[in-house]
Amino acid sequence: MSSQTDPRLLLLSPRDNVFVLRGAIDGGETVVVAGTEVQFSRRLGLGHKIAARFIAAGEKVIKYGAPIGSAVCDIAPGAHVHLHNLASDYTPTHSLAGSRTDHDAATGNKA
Amino acid sequence: MMTMKGYPRSDGRKGIRNLVAVAYLVECAHHVARQIVTPTPESAHLIGFPGCFPNAYAQKMMERLCTHPNVGAVLLVSLGCESFDRYQLERVVAESGRSVRTLVIQHDGGTRATVETGRAWVAEQAAILQDAEQVPLALSDLTIGTVCGGSDGTSGITGNPAAGLAFDRLVAEGATCIFEETGELIGCENIMASRAATPELAIELRASVEKAARYYATLGYGSFAAGNADGGLTTIEEKSLGAYMKSGQSQISGLIKPGDIPPRGGLYLMDVVPDGEVRFGFPNISDNAEIVEMMASGAHMTLFVTGRGSVVGSALAPVIKIAANPHMYERLSEDMDINAGRILTGAASLTQIGDEIFAAVIATASGQPTKSEALGHTEFILTYKSFEPLGPACLPL
Image 1 (tube, chains in turn orange, blue):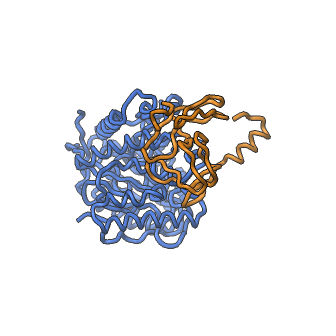
Image 2 (image 1 turned 90 degrees about the vertical axis):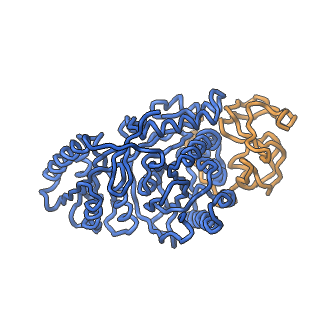
């Protein structure tokens, strides 16, 4: 699997089902994930994760060889894995994403 | 290798700095205490406790901090009517052999007069401490804490594992190393328990993380800031696994709580989550609360790994700042001691960065100021908590 994978992606443990981005990848760019070409719909920053294979709803997401939470919906190979499709098995995650979107829309800021 | 020298203390520990600690004993004395240290920022550091209600944890923390190995003399600044037991604190400091004086604003003529008296005493003590005798210092004399703050998706793959490598070398040399924030080890309880020195300690380690998970679940928030999510971290477990990398691979010798001083070298987990029902709010409201607790357990310095870019330092004990993210390093290089982001760009290996951190520990112990120290960072925060004593299986025999 890893031999067919883009060098900008990092697999931290052979048990993982997500890759970590070694650097930002822009929207429109194509990466090869598990032998399949996937086009990014928007820019993702360094340190973000994408699915290394299909992850079914309810399945554990594995990074560092250990579970980091459960998929809340089916996740396609190459898709961004983050707050919208991964939830903690312990405590919910708090982010400013919604508030920032509202603020940016009101002030005309571009993220 | 630089020659490390320390300031000998009566309890057998040695300091890598020789500072005057100026401590306010209630927020009402904060301004006066701050005015006292202002002219001498390099020789006098401000610490204190803001609350007016008595608290055993705060009393213990202040006693430990005022007798920290990096502290050579102590000025206590009291308003006069607060509940803090200044008599006991002064006695503990005096019994340690350090010079100590208490100023009580209500008795000593108010703000202006107390500031004047305090500044004169600090200047006199600083001159004495400057000429103090130094003795050889070994790595086994050192206690080193580690913390990560402003984490992102790079922290767990560059800075934290590199700090872990440095910890492995330090533990092998007989140093005492402390990692902490059980609220940021949620999800790591099983792998961590497998590293415990004894099966009984494994149970204690697991229980400390379960306590943290319960505590944070009651509060409704994990130890997870909005910036963590911007940096690509999604869940507390993910942040935890990254944070856990700081602990390295050594056997875990014991479990301590804030202010407990490890009996000998080795790797210790500090349980920072209060015992009992949820009281007084969040366990550690910001990174400096964790640094202060490790100082109270004797940490001479702290390794601070940051991805988003924290700029803090600390009063009393230097902070070595390790940048995990190469882009952040470019923006904040004046604040960062180590660029672990080079692991991601391919410019350095994990082992090389681990060696750089190890060398930075020796340089800092030899008296070289860290970046945050040179910039004058002396952040400090101490709030209410309550703990029960350690269980019998927590410390090595």
